[in-house]
Length: 311
Picture (cartoon, one colour):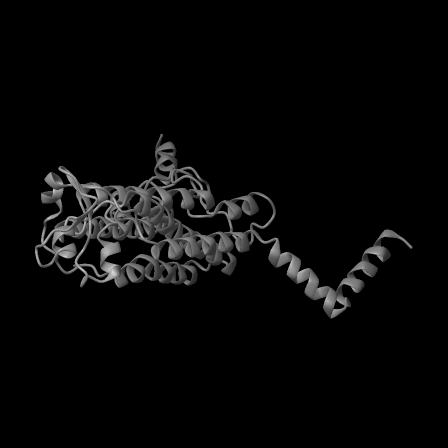
């Protein structure tokens, strides 16, 4: 039997494989898929974040002379907690879904983008809760929430302070919540979701890319709009007396850094000529599948080419 006949026999056997064998093959392909690993990592971060959300923070010793820092009035949230996943998570998911149809990208790329967004959002939530619980910093409105009747009670108190004991009528959830000031969860989650959207838009619009020459400023402005929204949310947390300025700034830093790290793990640097393509696509483009991602022409900026032609 020659080589061509042997290859033909292997193809026939592969096409006529038994259903159990085909199912095992599909199962192995799915299990070993890198996209599945990304989704499992995001799921693990989600479970960790939700588990820590239900935990109680550390009961800290409070100096009496510092209570004036925590005596601001209790105000209604300008940005309710339930809206954070809507604009910071669901909104970017919808944006990536719409962009997939406009740019006609593969479904596998959308799945990886969604997994990256989930990882950035859930990992930020886990990091934020991991810091809130052991620190146990009191919120600016702690006094008015813990002692609504004005009677301050301390446990194991001494001349300088003690451990606050809230009024029995205050719900347990509020008692835990007023000890979770640092860092700001609204700020960090907003920065994670909206920051990831900003980095994605920077890659697609290419204001820093070597291949772009005209319209850099408007591209940069459009890409930064989601991040402006995250900063605005952080400002409301300070103005509503739910967080100190340091809480909001730390939350923004956690969210933006996490989003940038996750984005850079699947996309090339923003200065790359083809920064709009994932790293996997760049590998395929340079190898053998140029029909899926056809070359966009010479990577040399158009303005450089025009200037060279004039000279």
